[in-house]
Amino acid sequence: MLNKILGCLYGQALGDAFAMPAQVHPDDTERCFGWLDSWQDAPDDHIVHAGLPAGRITDDSEQAFSIAQAVIKAGGVTLDAVVQGLISWYDRVGGDDSPYVGPSTRRGINALKAGGDPRRTGTWGDTNGAPMRIAPIGTLHPGDIAGAVADTVTVCMPTHYTSPAVSGACAVSAAVASAMVDSISLDAMIEAGLRGADLGKGHGRAWFGCSVAYKIEQALAIAKGDQDDRTRLRRIFDEVGATLNVPETVGAAFGLLAMAGGDPKRSAILAANLGGDADTIGAIACAMAGAYAGFDAIPADDIAVLENDDVFRAYGVRKIAVGLEALINVSAG
Image (cartoon, rainbow, N blue to C red):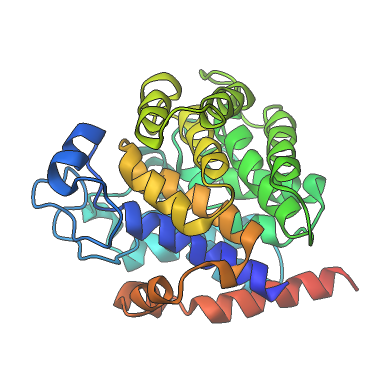
């Protein structure tokens, strides 16, 4: 169990940090790096991450870890714990001045800090902050998709309580929950994600957005084709999309998961060469892959890169994993 939790958390950070330097368009990434398959600093002209060193995690992992810490402290997923985790992270990074705080997250947290009702502050949140930070919640529910969906709805509420955002987050948490079961197949894990997307779409404020499940299936059809990696990645970028839009983000992440055969490092490399919101897509894909394949599937050299980074190290990720495992054991009685 701990191996899978660690795989999920370190996978999240791997996909986030490895894809962090990727440019918005894959042509620009290729011009900068060729095929991006090694740790790199962010380019000086990066639209969001300029100045970040190789191996640096971003808000994708920081929010996931901060919420997990608050949930552990509270003894389980509560709305108050989620609010505390989000505000703690926002204050920690100087959110008002940070260039990489997403629009829905910024709007929701500012409303919370102004005294807003956390059951209503997220009703405009439709970008991909919800699925990018949800994976640790999935680890709390081994094999229990309904339980993962219920807690995911709570986590989405303060900043991303719209139907596409909840659906996308539930797809990810359900896939992670299923991956916590020993010997599950990758296909079964992906099917669990599709079920989670369907269960989640009935929650939150009805909002613009195509079907998350459809985008996942569209990406899977491309991923399972016989074209080379570059061609399939460009098709996912052009046809599925790789923007902050939730169905695009989640669909692309599942596509990369399938292309990589559930391997965390390969998922990270594919995300880095996809373009778009590559670090977020990479964080999601690699968190799922890490839960599926386990911590031991992540190369030791990559673990060392992450653990050498001050920001990652400050979150005490191994301690978070132990805390999540303890919550699972308490729930199991």
